[in-house]
Image (cartoon, rainbow, N blue to C red; front, top):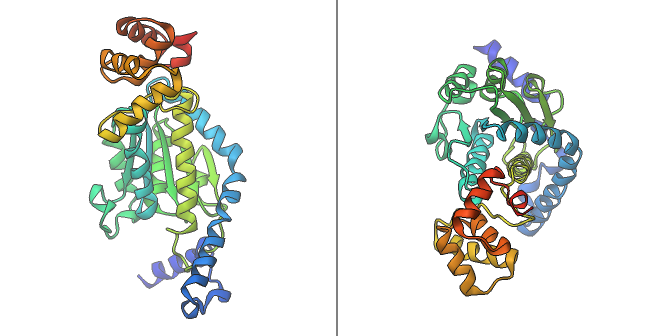
Length: 305
């Protein structure tokens, strides 16, 4: 037990994300406004760290989109904050891009309970990650993104190792250089944000960096899949009043049509924004617009041309 603890402590001590910053040792004595200024200045460094990885991020996205276009899924796997960020990104895809809930999936060590409550020991199990992925019946068209600030979390590393052995595309997203997670993955993204304001609190800069990268992976993949028309979310699912209002505004921005024509098109299209836009821009009925979109693989710009 002592040996294992000593080894883990040595591993953590070697990580940039766990480094102690002596210059901040008296931060608790500072005025609140000064602490806020320090945190804001720290956060401002994150985009530059992400920018350094853009070529690798873009390559990972292109590979992901190519597989998803053929029916693959996007799966995030992580523990703690990293796992929660994956679950968050996955849960926002259905209302934003009208994806099936099974198309983008967030796995967190310890299961759904771990989203709100810490599940002790779950992150330490590679076997648990393999079981979770096997529950999805992972295939060669799927993409698994292991997310871990340290880059050593067994659950994330195990997920990537298991997925790669099953022939899936693998992406390792970490915040330390030379991480085990990146080494295990086909696509390696290491966003080094440096030591945290609070020693080892990787929900701060590391979490922000992970959120930015996950935003890119899901959003740009969906753009590549034709889920947008320009910068309009034409696959948005109108599941509440706000989104219904947004649907009408999107159709208006895309077509510049009169309000009554927009309402008529959306009603005939059963609320499908892409169908309504195609009806108005191509001057066709709902059935014709639906067929054209099906032939175009759901890509509105292709259906229009």
